Each structure stands twice: as structure tokens, then as C-alpha cells.
Length: 122
Image 1 (spheres, rainbow, N blue to C red):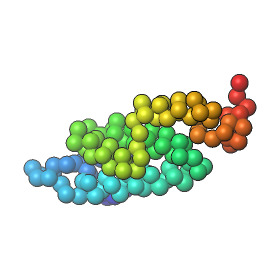
Image 2 (tube, rainbow, N blue to C red):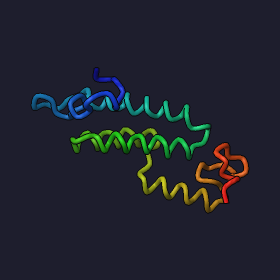
Image 3 (tube, rainbow, N blue to C red):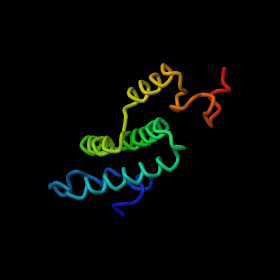
Image 4 (cartoon, rainbow, N blue to C red):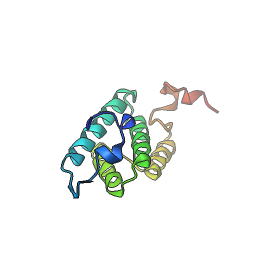
């Protein structure tokens, strides 16, 4: 049960940093496995755009963090997610603005080549 999908388990109990009054050594390993699975899932769905990967992966991590009640667990999730290029919502906004400033769409692609149709938008 410790390595199931985040969405299907009570992450505060499974990945509690303290279990029975002692540090839970499986927490970091379990969180790392789940974050890496989440990163791989988002890599496969990004259409080879780093910007799309970052935005989608980071949003997925933010959803997980918002469900965790334990402060140490939230910090651990974010720490591990940084290793997979997690960006805060502010950093994602900055990345998107940087793309727009460079003449790209928010997906980091030439708007006329973007499969999302960004070049067709007014």
C-alpha cells in the first residue's frame, strides 16, 4: 500500500514522517517513488515541450501538497519534486511570461507550430 498512487491513499498516514513516535525511514523513499512516477507520467503527456511538462507536473504536485495535512510531509514532497524540476506557481507564471516575451506561446513553442493552436488565437 505504501507505493500506490497518491490520489488513492491517505498520504498523511502512509507517508507520515513520524510513526509510533519515531522517524519513518520509508517516507522519503515512498515519496520519491511517487514523485518520480508522477514526473514520468507528465513527461509522457507533455508533447516534448519542457514548459508543458513543468506546468503540468508542478500543478500535479501542488494538488498533492494541498491534500497533505502534515507540514513535514508537504516539505518532503516539495523537496523531492524539486529534483524533478518542480516549479512554484509563481515560477510557472514567470516561465510562461518569459516564453511570451521571447515570441513563443505559453507552451514554449513557436505559436504558428503549436499543436494547441496558439497561432490561431487573436
